[in-house]
Amino acid sequence: MKPVRFFLVVLFVLALGGGLFAQANSNEQRSAGGISPGKESEYYYINVDIETIYPYRLGYLIIYRRGVNGIGRAYIPLTWFDDLAGKAKLVALGPGRAWPHLTVYYRNGEFSHCRLFVRREASHASWGNVPLNVNIDDRFEGVDTLELEF
Image 1 (cartoon, rainbow, N blue to C red):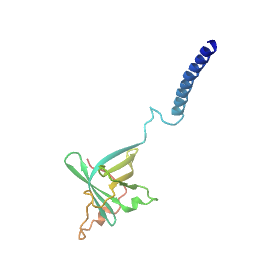
Image 2: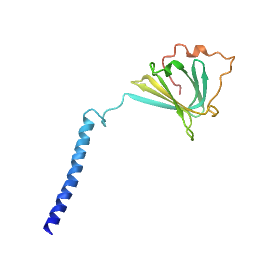
Image 3: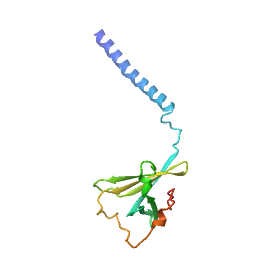
Image 4: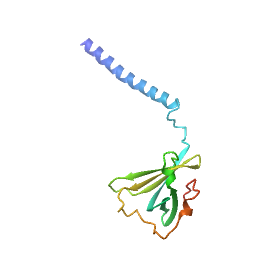
């Protein structure tokens, strides 16, 4: 009977001791430059719902929601989607109920990059067409940042 009790006590102590060491290790990793409760990220982001996406030969014209009743426009040049520029990424949404949206990331208060989440199907209600006789080339020239209006 004594060996069984001794075995159970040793097993109990090992089980509790492992948990205590795991907690101490986790706290050491947090304070060593990993995730820290007191350290804030230099990035923040803003999500806006997209009403309509107009592909154009120089980029995308995005009509997005501003609050409840407002509409805003954003012009994203195609050059931003190059791997070298790296200012924008196009993410194709699969089938489902997800609505297209634009996520804009800021680093220390200045524009960093954006992600454009669009529906893969060109027949989706969020896609539109710029008429052939409309010239909006000047809207895409010299665009270096993306400032959303609210």
